[in-house]
Length: 181
Length: 63
Image 1 (spheres, chains in turn cyan, purple):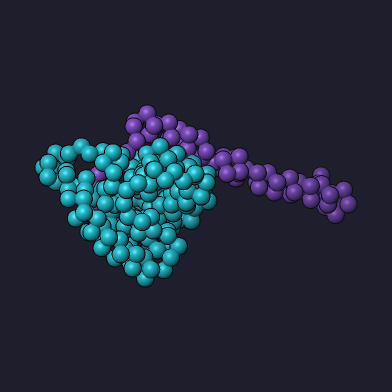
Image 2 (image 1 turned 30 degrees about the vertical axis):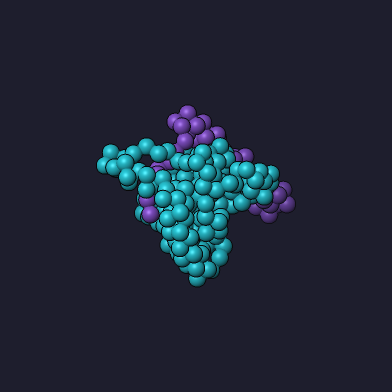
């Protein structure tokens, strides 16, 4: 968090290096979040660009105590919602649990067994199949480690509603994961 | 909950960084220093004008 405050101060001073630090630190996380929300790597890439253009444009207008992580996820989520409003719904894209559904990289980590990799893939598929409202709260809290309060602010709902959605998401996830075994 | 780490291809990482970086300081079309200079110049001009107007009206003696 202290590191983020230093980045924010750098941004306020108009230092391009601070922008690079923010980009390197949060780009993969914002991309992963948008990838799993949009279920389309190309769309996710465009929205990452939109998010960081917004950061560049607003760099000197941030508050000195801005929570950079929450700020970026809020902008990313709004960019996604705005994109979705205009996107033409292609029903075939939303078919869930299909074998050919593109998933994030399936490479195994150095210490990961084949079973672990398969289990992770099952979870990925189950996350993809969650309803969007539940998927986004799960990605923010369970994957990105944001607090319920932070997630609630980003999603523009009450912390209690965020808790309820998260609990529903976890239950649905468990069911979906079993089904894909 | 741990999911796969995902990222874009390096060439896309660099392309998006360059595209976004080009917008730094673009919110008013001026850099940070330029934005500071504009009010400073306006203030200096106003002070000079007041001095000139006061001298012209014989309120102060500049020589």
